[in-house]
Image (tube, rainbow, N blue to C red; front, top):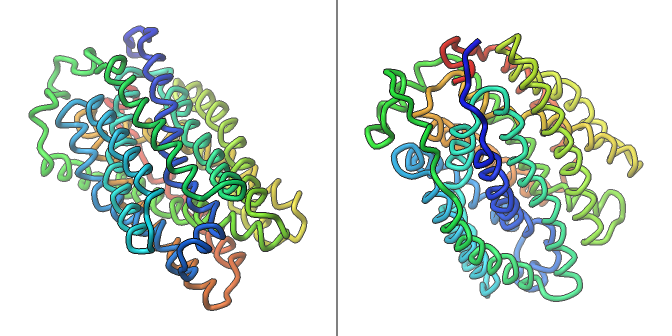
Length: 411
C-alpha cells in the first residue's frame, strides 16, 4: 500500500476554516426559498417567477462553474475561495435593497457568478491536504457545512415572519464580508500538493483545453456527470419547493414549513457524511470502488423513501422518508470529490468538479423553474417529487460504471 504524507493539524484546520464558508454558501442561496410569502407580498410575482429566482442563480452558476474550477487549478485555491466569499456576501447584502422583480433577479444572477468559484476550489484545497485514508471524512465534514447552511436557511422564513424579509440578507451578507477578512489572515495553500513526478505539473501550466480533453476522454467521468445531473434534479426540486409543499400539504406556517423542509434532511445528511465518510475511507483500503459503492447503496434506499414522503398525508411518515434521503445525500457528498480524485489527476480536479457542477446546476435550475410552472398549471408538487425519486435510483446505478484508476486510487 502506498505511503501517505502525515495528516497535519493544518490539514484539519483548513476544514475547520472552510466550514463556516460552506454554511454561508448554502444559507445565502437558499434562505430566499423559505420566505416565499413575504417576498411575494413585498414584490408581486407569479410562482413561475419565484422559481425563476432560484433557476437564474443555478443557470449562471452552471455556466461559470467549469471556468471557475479552472481558476482554482490555474491559480491560488485559497485566493479564489476568499474572493468568492467576499463578493457573494456583498451581493447577499445588496439583495436586501432590491425594490422590484428585475432587481431581485439581477441580484440572484450576480450571486451565481460569485458562488460558482467556491466549491470546486474548496474541495480541491481539502483533498490537497487530505490524501488517502482521511479524504472522504474530511470532504464530508466540509460538506456538512452546506447542510448547516441549508438547515439555517429556514431562519429566513422565521426572520421574514417576525421582521422584514430583507433582515436576513442584511445580517448574513455582513457576516460573510467580515469572515472573508479573517480568511485573508488564516487560509493558506498546501505546499505539499505538487509532488515532483510526471503525473503532476505546477498549477500555472494547466490549460483549460487539456483539462477538458483529459476529462471527456474518460468514460467514468461521463458516468459521474450523469450521476451528478440526476441527483441535482432531485436536490434542487427539494431545495426550491419542499418548503412550499410542506406548508400546503401539512398546513404549516411559513417558518415551520421552512424548518421542516430543511432541518430534518440536513441533520440526517450531517450524520450521513460522518457515517459515509468513515465507511468509505475504511472500505477503500481494501476495495478502491468502496467510495462509489457507499452512495450507491444509500440512494437505492433513498429513492423509495423520497417517493413515500411525497405520497403520504402523515407528517411523521414524510419526515422519516426525508431523513433516509438526507442520510444517502450525506453518503454522496462525503465521496463525490474523492471519487473524482480516483479518475482525474490533481491538476484537473477543480476543473472537473466545475464541469460536474455545470451539469448539476443547469439541470437543477431547469427543474426548479419547471416545478413552479407545473404548480401554476395546478399540477401538484408531489408529482414532481415522485418523479425525482426515480431519478435518484437511476443516478445510483450510474456509479456502477465509475472505475477507479489504480495509479489515482489514493493519490
